[in-house]
Amino acid sequence: MGGVGWAICRRKPEVMNPREFEIVAMTDTPPTPPPPPETPTPELRNPHQPPTHFSRPKPLPLPKRFLLLLVEPEKWAHAAIYPFTVTFWPLVWAMIIGAACLGFSLSAHSIKPLQAFANSYDQHYLPMLLQHGKLSLLKPAGKTKLAPLYIPNVYETVMVNTSLTGAAALKTKPLIWLFNQTDLVITGEKVSHPMVVMSMAKLQREILLANGAIKPAVLKTTPVDKLPAVRIDSPTLQKFFKVLSPVVVLVLGLLASLIFLLTNILWTVFMVLLTGFLVMSINRNIGMPLKAAWRISMAVMIPMLVLRGLLAVFNLVPVVNNSPIVDQIIYMAPIGLSLWAAILANRLFSRPSAGGRAL
Image (tube, rainbow, N blue to C red):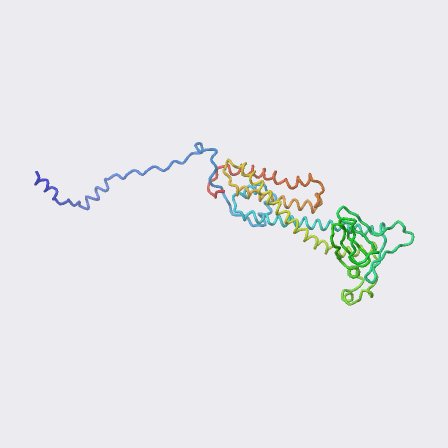
């Protein structure tokens, strides 16, 4: 037996004919592939599970995107699915436009009191004479009720006192714009050292130039004591303010716009941080992240910034409002709009959507 066993072990392995291999391969049954994973049907899907993806079409061009964010509330909700810059640049446009509307509205409205002052000057104040770079009062016969220029205000006072010269110090008012015999001076109890703003000689040249009484080339070469005298009354002030108004509107408008731009930035940052948590909490059932909620809050601020500027342009709400209630309504209005945008986003993104990108 041992020899037979050893013989069997020593037997050479049989080599299968290639034809026989093909026959065996053809008759052999291949293994059954594993079934594909089951896709949950809509009935079995968890209704509280947030959708994984949302459609995100290509952003529109910046001008069209800016206009749609102004007038279409659904675009506020759509801001959640776009990158930060898609909403940031329209927001920058809105801050600049709103600040410019506020600044130039303030400067334009500030001209109206000057025009009204020029028209009514002869009815309330004594006329004045600028001659040889010095200011003096005129007393027309029969007009005893007229007095030197004096306009008091809560914040500042404008007055004429020709008995003073140079940087005279007055401590009776918080801030005084003093027209004395030789200079225009800022003084008052809030000013530690009186400051000369303009000499009467320069003011005489400016009024002559604005009223067209002398040519610029001649004005520069003519000594002060040779300049024509200037009578300051209603006709003179009307011409002067008419020429001065565009310059005042431009300069004051630019300065005011920069201040309002800073105000808009602070307002926007505060509201975006505040309302972002509100938007996120309303959309917690779809798992909206805070950064997506902030993008919605940024979109909401775009129409608010432009609307605040337009209200000032059409004088529906004053630029500088004295009513705290109106100010609170205006500056807290983004909270209500953010609530609206959050509800729109929840309705939009809580529906299952095929394809697209996540929030």
